[in-house]
Length: 160
Image 1 (spheres, rainbow, N blue to C red):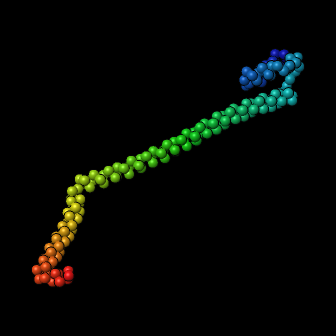
Image 2: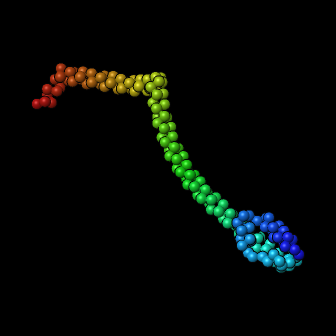
Image 3: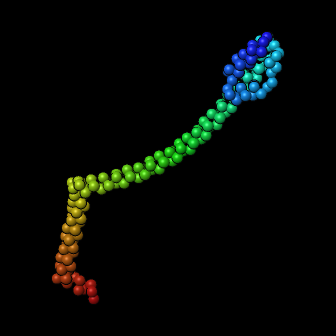
């Protein structure tokens, strides 16, 4: 095999490699006068080494992507927790505002609905007026009895 053929074989072997891989392969000394055939053990060794280097680079790339994804996942988990806390706080504040609004509406309805409050007041006033009338009648009746006792002289004899 000529030197040109050997160089062509090495160039074809280097074609699939990146620049870094090519430099490391060129650093190896090949005897350009030696004759190589594809059946010789050197080509499978070069191919195996190339495959191992490629696998290592893919593995490193995947590890880096995995670290990036884990960091992003942790960040998103933290953001989710912060969001949950904010939602919980907002729900609590909203519930307080709803409760205050219900109290306001109920108070407004009582003020706006004169029939219920007036009826209740009228009922209470009517009861109090009947009691007052009854007590006034009893008071008047007692005064009349005292007057009649005084006029009949029954109380004068009791006082002595």
